[in-house]
Length: 384
Image (tube, rainbow, N blue to C red; front, top):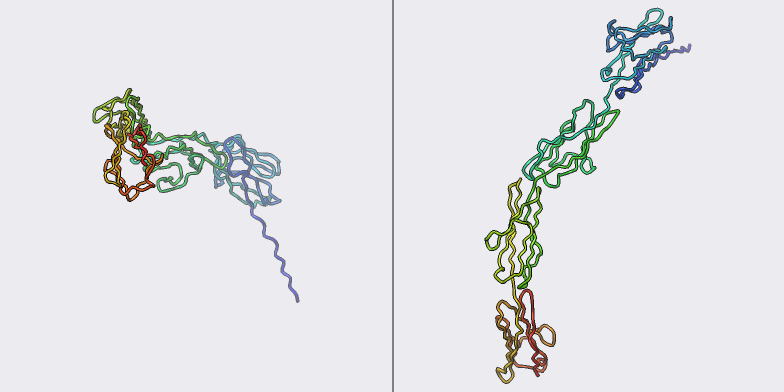
């Protein structure tokens, strides 16, 4: 014979679902029942995971359709005929487990435990630092997101970019503290910390670090090194530094003004020499210097040009000038002279000799004398 076996579905177990599980302080939460037996006649809610009378919050009878308050009733709980329990205006103290006990007419008891977690609305965080004036390359710095909050997540940003662990950046286990090792001027920020929990989020005001550094090597402007006699010398010195550098000048070892700008009117040749700018940082206590060699040159007189035949087919030309410190350039037919293997210049370029003169050597010759600030040409000399 054919035997047919019938297995009834097992009865689903009583359970509690919090709506929601994570709730903001001051809001409401409902402990909603699932799989309640149809013949349930009584509901008993207890605070915690045990069912002792002193922990009874409230009970409800389906026989009398009435609720009875227990010792743990706070005045903010409401029980519904289906046994679900509403908490109103919850506080952090409501966080935890709650146990429901149900009964049937034949005194069968069933229990279930559920709970929820109450979170405070997060206050605006702020960042504290352990060193208000760290020095570049010397100090490490710890930034802490305050206050410390249970069940909160911490997030750090710099220039609106999320910060992750790196070679010089280290986050604590809970991300609440950010450590910067060997800070540099590029670590100034701004930094923000953000706190998050399941019901809210808040962000600190930006914090920009005051990192002391420098001074770097000063830069002296203008870049010119040669100036004309009688003009004014105006030099400025700048070095990247925090706090801003203090400046002082010296000339050939003699102290001058303690200013960033140096002005000397009506230059004379005895103002040629070495000008030194010193940049000093009062916090790092470091000094950096830059030296500029300034040459003051006067006007030059027009040179004269003389030519002589040294041999029947050779010629020598001489540029005559009494000015010291000049350079001499030779010009042929309005172009800088290109020397051939038949031409030779003296060491100071004041004499030009041409051996075995040819027709292509005929033309207009000039010499030009110059110092770093001015130049002047001789009268022309035409060689046929």
